[in-house]
Length: 183
Ligand SMILES: [Zn+2]
Image 1 (cartoon, rainbow, N blue to C red):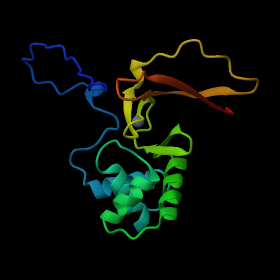
Image 2 (cartoon, protein in one colour):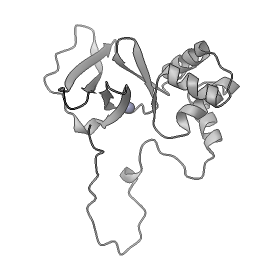
Image 3 (cartoon, rainbow, N blue to C red):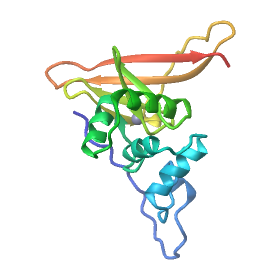
Image 4 (spheres, rainbow, N blue to C red):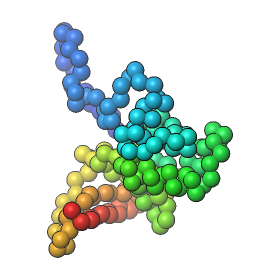
């Protein structure tokens, strides 16, 4: 398995107490004083979704704990444990609405298996085939070279790399998916 990436920080004699530079604030920017429930409500409203009870319940499970990659089944199980009486169909529908509103990004790893990513910024993924988990690879760590020209009338919408992992007695296989749509 791959160890977590350690950020190296250049030490500087910091005699004056200036606030951290803006680029040190992780994305998405979160106000430390905001209540998580009102933050979820605000996120839904900003995306043009009415904060219904079901959306709030699932939005809370998705967005109140930092960045996550969850399948519909995982979220359904979490909702059951949180005593939210939602059907699996409702979970699927809500995940689709959140994705269409730009709150989630879909990550398809193998066959019909889809994960929903609360981090919608550009980045890539490890997929662990042994335990079927998805983890982030920061976008800056992979550079994709030699992309083909998009077909006539099309532009490349995004490039997404899924690096598949299994335990070390096998070898990791890398697959690339290029997703394009009309400009
Ligand atoms: Zn991700």
